[in-house]
Image (cartoon, rainbow, N blue to C red; front, side, top):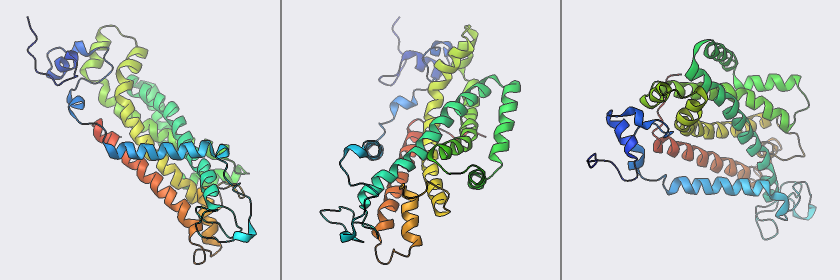
Length: 314
């Protein structure tokens, strides 16, 4: 008998069946929540891809900066002090004749590591715990949830300041560990809430009733549906971590000079009253941070809209 069910192009019949409620068990093994709305929407759009191209370009420049034959970020040229943008120094120089393009590119390494590494660790650790706690519940959920609440109860910036005061000298590794500890409970809460929203869905119930093991349900059924919200929130977390590093630089608690970071470059120009003489010292790193944060937030917003990520109760 021919299948006369109406479905969108590219949507498996199992998903349509699950969406209409006629055969929810058929969705077992597809790895996606039984809804056909995602396929009917358009793509991510040009704004998303432009933002992604910008982020990838900045990551490429930061990773391969030493291979781009840039001037050393600490090299001083006293014949070009406070020079404006030109052929020899594309973004100008600072009060010691150091090339600002080189300093921004090398300084972005610190900001990108501080942004992406702790969030990556938080997604793995906090995400794994949130996935397990949201699905299994019980003592595991209660215990991990209580620990997360205790960590979140302490203000993030104040916690970083206190830890750094007792864990000197400041280094990139130490900042990464501290930021990861702060990010992990946040990501745990978000992924746990999303897991709770999907754990009672028909395709998960069908998988459980067919004898699927917990590991298979977590990896094959829940994880593909939770990843969009995790990535979306993670991108916002990256932007927040970059801003937090800049705040620490203004307090003198970030990476110490002469190692450049975007935060301490801006701070150096502001504290030495150089903005009236040479605004480029703070302009270029500030513009970099602005464009990076804008790109990350637009990407996160588009992903959230595309995958129809809804805020669940935390």
